[in-house]
Image 1 (cartoon, rainbow, N blue to C red):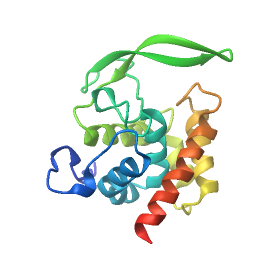
Image 2: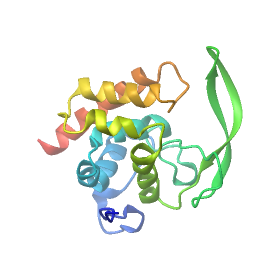
Image 3: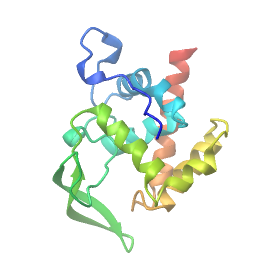
Image 4: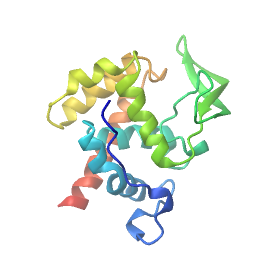
Length: 181
């Protein structure tokens, strides 16, 4: 089995002001995520803009990261990261329902990003998605197809998830474009 590519650990970076995260600020959140994880996500075969957009949607641009969970990943069994019970909103029969659910509680943002990548690459529910998008260019059209595939596989119960994630994707893309140009 191939060793995972090491990724930077932003949880211990003190001397890089560009890696400071101001929760709720799209520019700060995007900059933090992109500068920290962008190259690694690309090497792993992911469009960083999509992953950052999903995290922005799940956390309100970094405002809600209980247990460092950047992706709202639930814990359906005891896992190595532990879990936190939180109230969540699910959509059941087109009605919003509040429920108590166990969410993974990684010990760092680094571990959270790794958990998301592992979820998509290695769980039966999602792993087919990587094959669908391998080698495709990073375009808004492909981003929407990826987000739709993740949604269709059961990532979210919100019927507006794809629309909301694409709104975040467009904002993230604009911010990253201004950073790199």
